[in-house]
Amino acid sequence: MENVTITVNGAPRRAGAAVNTTVLEWLRAEGLTGCKEGCAEGECGACAVLVARDDGRGNTRLDSVNACLLTLAALDGGEIVTSEGLGSPQHLHPAQREMAVRGGSQCGYCTPGFVVSMAAEYYRADREAGQHGAPNGFDIHALSGNLCRCTGYRPIQDAAHALGTPEDGDPLASRRSQPAPAVATTHVKAADGEFHRPATLRETLDLLAAHPHAKVLAGGTDWNVDVNLRHARADVVVAVDHLPELRRFEVTDDAVLLGAGLSLSELERRLGGRVPLLAAWFPQFASRLIRNSATLGGNLGTASPIGDSPPVLLALDASVLLVGPDGGREVALSEYFTGYRQTVRQAGELIAAVRVSRPLAPLTAFHKIAKRRFDDISSVAVGYALDVQGGVVTHARIGLGGVAATPLRAHEAEAALEGQPWTEATVRRAARILGRTGTPLSDHRASAAYRAAMLEQSLLKFWFDSSEVTA
Image 1 (tube, helix red, strand yellow):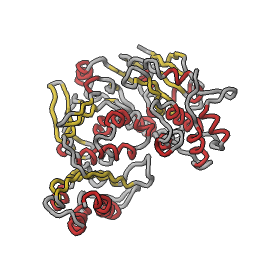
Image 2 (tube, one colour):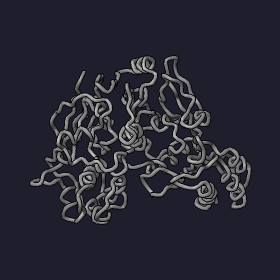
Image 3 (cartoon, helix red, strand yellow):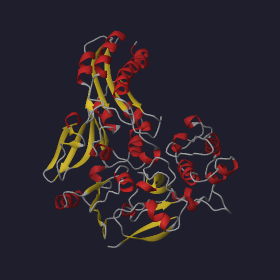
Image 4 (spheres, helix red, strand yellow):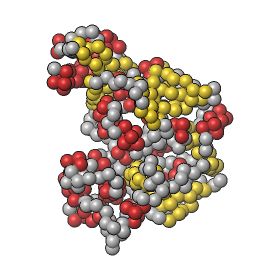
């Protein structure tokens, strides 16, 4: 196979096969230059497009994603809407019109991406007046992955909060009540390599056995940064996010099972706040544009010491379910990381799911220390899960990121808390221990001394914030 087929703004287009080409590159080559390249790493949102996806009820949800982080071949059989597909100069889309009349656009470079993200929120099926503190229910954090260098954000926010509801006859609103495109089984063989989207888990494992150095692709939000900025290339890419075995979601009295192939936005919607620590973490993980594609499997698979999911999952005593040619196995996350970007996962194995045992510790928090409040890489990340009974700490789990070559549990600080009264004196002693945990280094994000100080201050903040709850 040398081509893929993608529906763009309602019309099918044939795309020449290329394994290491992004949707952004292809759209611009096709003349759809409303899709801009600002950063090529998913931080600016200038390349935002809408992707039609199954909403879980047989209808369609329009998700905003970064086209710079979307592999072209992975979109085979899919459907997208670009800024050009929303409206025209003669017939502006409501989001375009509000941006114009409220002064939300000056140089215009960022504007198409803002408009696309606004449109995703405009068409959100469960948006209701009064949600998120907005009269029209618009979640302004839907724009957290879009950056503007000219106007400032007040007129853009005004435009977002002025949007009403879709009118009768709006074609994209009507599109939501129709099925999303089925995920296609794909095999592309091109000059720069091969792309596979196998139909079954068995086929996937056979492919990985035959190509042990293949790049496993889920959301692509990490891999395509390397493709764009470091010119990384893969001879063989195997897409796995569609596999049913990686998209499981279960909540029982004993555990919560989170499929490794589900996007973070999907997990957030399905959980509905039932795991408070995850609910606190989701909004701080990158942006909505990223969370609409990124997966837990991908975040754990990179084994980055600054990934934001490991500290949270370590605090939750989570385990990783691996599946390979010899069957499945379960590994405690605290034993999963073995070195810098190294894990116990063997060649040919996939992360199938993450299991979080219940009942959950009642006292939790996630602290992310970064230069920007949202859409930034953390200098230090800390997850807390404690149980305090009768004023005494009976259970303590603290997960850390950014302070060592791997994410890690703060065992000494946990031991300094367990069995002790939940008091400021106890917390200050444990905080001093926590500040010495890991082997923090100095880099462009923070100094080692700063990281150590933030660990101490984080535990103190957690105690002060939670003291009313446990009083």
